[in-house]
Amino acid sequence: MDLQNRIALVTGGTKGIGAAAAIRLAEGGSDVALAARHDDDSTRRTLAAIEATGRRGVFIPADMAIPEQVNGCVEETRDKLGEVDILVHSAGGPIAGKLLEIEPEDWYRGFEVHVHSAFHLCRAVVPAMKGKREGAIILISSVAGIRGVPAVIGYQTVKGALPQMTRALARELAEDNIRANCVAPGIIRTDFHKNMPEEVKQHNIGNRIPLHREGTPEQVAQMILELITNDYITGETVTVDGGLTMRIA
Image (cartoon, rainbow, N blue to C red; front, side):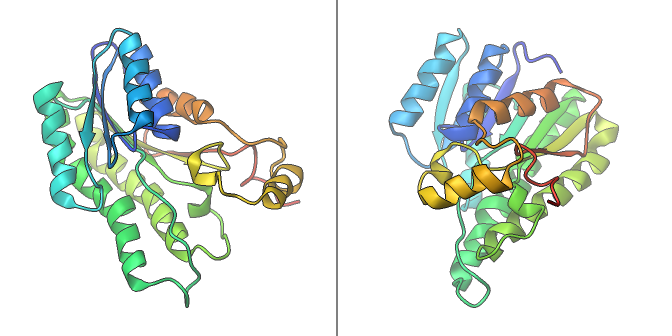
């Protein structure tokens, strides 16, 4: 897919991986809508970076846990920029707690934010993609959705659902030339990991990650762009994790 003059919707697009992907899309020639809960300094910096490329950028306030707001952000993107050609669903957040610790409300909200929102987003953008006979959908999972991790059963479960949803979408929508792929980041230098204790960080770098360094949002965004632009890839989940999930020793 050529990015020139495309319309992209990036959820969680104001910071971290979402912001990096949004900026790369704009650099490639796309207009970008950023959907997130808060309009803050990160939002303004990301919009400024998009507009510096000469492309249009808009911010759409939306809570991905609320279906009406999910559908509303697609409608507002359509009204302000045009029909969505590219969907990058990067919104999310931590869900702490072991099986006997996690509150049921947190479990349910985790599904709303990570999984149900993907369902509503895809239902909202796919009809126009079918009409154009082209579209690209990227869901953001995590290495925690691929391998077992202690103490975060909710997060692992919702992130584990996204690769299978990706395969289901890819198989169902292939006849309409709509591709769906998934990216599973490892330990990336974002706000999500900023509160990681220093001893845990050093253990990860020294013992768990074969490349012995954290990743950056820009490195994940590079893979997102590859999966959007390479129109012979669909149904895949690609890890960007410095080798974290491939190791056995």
